[in-house]
Structures are given as C-alpha cells and as structure tokens.
Length: 212
Image 1: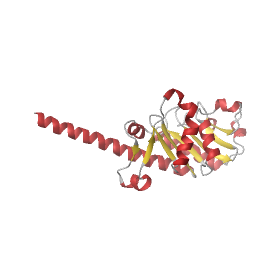
Image 2: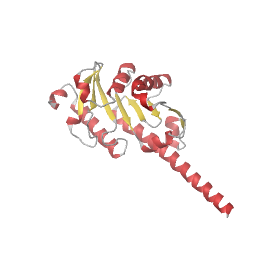
Image 3: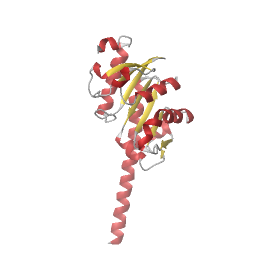
Image 4: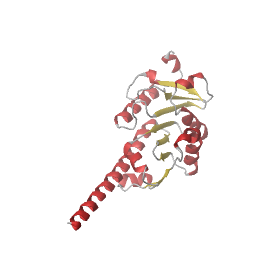
C-alpha cells in the first residue's frame, strides 16, 4: 500500500513527533523489537498506530498506519493491541495518545506486589500510590483486555494501568507526556526493586555474620 496516501489526513508534525517519541521509548527499553504499541488519535473515528511488524526503533513511515474504529481488512496489518487502543479512544474522550509498553523494572516490581507506592520524592508527588492489576488467566487475557483495562482506568480515575506480568498501558493528552510519565513510573519502580534487592542482601549478610 502507499504509505503517503495512508497518512494524507495526518498532521505531519504530529506524525513526526509520534515517530520520535517511539524511538525515544525504544532506546529507553520501554519497547522491545516487535513488542509494544503506540498510537495517536486523529479524530473521533480514526487513529494512527504502529503496524504488526513494526520495528519501533526505526523512523520509517511504513511502520505506522491509520485505522478506523470499524474493523476492516486493514486491521490485519495493525498491531495486535489495536483493539485495546480503539476501545480506550471510544470510551475515554481525554485520551489523545496511547502507549502499551513493557518497562523491565515496572514489570519486575509488579510480579510480587499488589500496589505501586513510589518511595522517591518525584514518584511519590506524581503518583502517590496505584493498584497493580492482576490479569488472572493468561490464556484468556486478550479476550478481556480491552474492557478490563478501560474499566480500571475509568473506575480508578487514572490514566495508566500496570498489569502484572503483561505491561503498562497509559494514555495522555499530549505525546510528549507519554514518554515522560512512563519514564517516571519506571524510575520509581527501578528504585523500589534495587532498594528491595539491597535490603535483602544486607539482611542476608547480617544473618551470615550471626551464623558465623
């Protein structure tokens, strides 16, 4: 298909910003190769999202496409997470851009905790505390993901959800805020994980010295 024709209704500056943000997030390890999704609302019926085979560290336009909320043949080429992005755009008017990422420390922290409570100053001031969502049965997750993610965001009046072992979903009004908020969450999670590991090492050393 002709990429330029697909993007004819998209503001070129915003599209370039989407590509730049995607590249930044890949370099920060928020995306993996072929893993993750980023999108931007065009209007009430359309949005731009990366393709299924997009390599998100590439600035190529061919990695992005326009979808309508009404599913058609073009959805076959889109990210597997397109249906979740579409549902959020339809249900939450404040969502102008969305990212699904897999930040390592956030995911590691989610495996053993039920709440995300930053202990660093900036993280605490921004987030205070957030529930970590337990997705339950892995095999049926994608049959439930769009509704459950959206319900969580609305019921808790938040713009992000940490899903245990699956990833971080976030929406913002501006693209520039996506990478900033994800970075703050990941930095806080990194501090929590490293602090926990340090404390365990210290306790282990104390026990070893007592035993000896």
